[in-house]
Length: 353
Image (cartoon, rainbow, N blue to C red; front, top):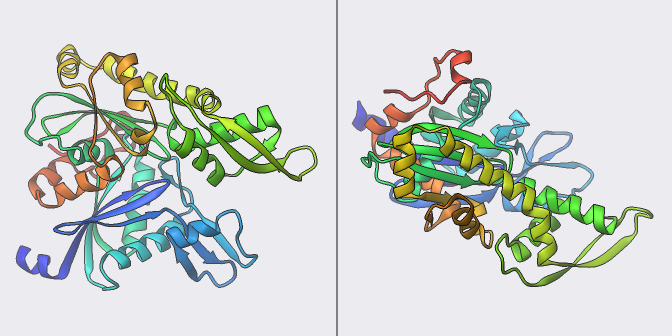
C-alpha cells in the first residue's frame, strides 16, 4: 500500500507565510518561493495572477481586479482567496499535474484549533488529500540543521512576516511554543506610522518594506539615507522626503523590544534544566527578520546568549517541514492532532507521543 501511495501521491512541505509562501519537494528542494498574493477578477471570480505577478498590482489594481494578501498575522483572513492561491501554487510545484498530494504545513505556536482547521480545510479544498500541521518553530529548528535526536533544549526564534514564533525544542519535539504579532509586517507599519507622524506623509506597504530592507538596522552602527515619495496628508499631493537609517531604527525599536521580551519570557517560564540547556546551546534565529541588520547582535546582547543564524533563514520552515516528509515516524509524533478539545488546544501545543 505504501508503494502504491508513493507512486500516486506527491509529498510537499509548505510554509504558508503572511508575506511569502514557500513549497519544498523531496529531492528537489524549494521549488516555489512567491509572495502570498492572488489577483482575482472582481466579477467572475477568476484567478488572474498569483505570487509575484499579483503582488506587482498591489496598490495599483485595475478597477475590475481585486488583489488579496489573504494571510495576515499568521491566520487566514480570506478563506476563498487562500484556497485559490494554494491550488495555483501546488499546481506550479507539481508541474501542472493533477496527482494527489500529501502536504505538511507549518503553523504558529499560538494558533487556535479553529485557525488550524481553516488551514487544513484550505489545503484540502486545494486538492491536497492529506494535510499534516506542525509547529513552525519545530520546522524552523530542523531547517536550521538541529538534529532530531538532540535531547538538549534549544531556543528558536523565527521572525516571519506576520508573526514571530518563539519555541523551545528538545528531543526533536516541542517543549513550549508561542507566537507574537511583533514581526515583519509590524515593522512595516511602524515605519508607516513614523513617517506619517514626523513628516505628515502617507506611504504604502511596499514603500515601507523597501525602506526596511535598505535602511533597517537595529544595531549600534546604522548609516545611510534614502529618498522616498509619498502623499502629503494635508493636501493629498506628492511629497518627497529623505529618511535616515537612525530614524528607521527609532521606528523599529518597539517591535524589536517586543520580540526580545517574548524570547525572555519563554526562558523565564521554562524549567531549570531547560534554562541550563539554553545557556549552553544558545538561540537559533530564522525567518526574514534574521536578515535585519544587527538583529542577531541585539538578541545576543540583550539575552546574553550565543545567537546562531540559519544558513538560509527565509527557507528554514519549508526545509524543516521537508525533512519530516522523509521521516514518517517523527511526523506522526509531532503532527498536531485534529481531535484535541478546544480548551486543551488553547492552553498548549499538543504533540502526538
